[in-house]
Amino acid sequence: HVQLVESGGDSVQAGGSLTLSCSASGHTYSSYCMGWFRQAPGKPREGVAALNADGTTTYADSVKGRFTISKDNAKNTLYLQMNSPKPEDTAMYYCAAELCPLVAGDYWGQGTQVTVS
Image (tube, rainbow, N blue to C red):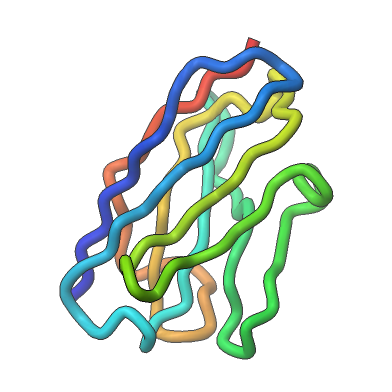
C-alpha cells in the first residue's frame, strides 16, 4: 500500500512558476511508476506528466516545454515544476502511483488546487 500527499498548490499569475510536491510513504517507493494528473471543473481527468520505468518522462502535449516532472528518491518525493502556467492549467492536481507502467493509477493523493489567473 502506498500513501501519497500532495502540497504546493496555490494561486499564481500566468507566466509565473509553481512547484508541486508529492510525498510518498508505505510500499517500496522505487517499485512504482509515478505521475501527475489533473482535473478541471466539468472536464475529465487527464494525465499531465509521468516518470517511466526506464527513467524517461512523458508529458501531455499541452504542458511540454513548460512543466518538468522529477523525483528525489532520498526524500521519497515527486515534484512537478510548472513554468509559465496558463489559465487553462487551472485544475486540481493529483499525484498517482502504480506498479509500472503508470496507466490509470492504483494509489492517489487527495489533490492540490492550482489556480492560474
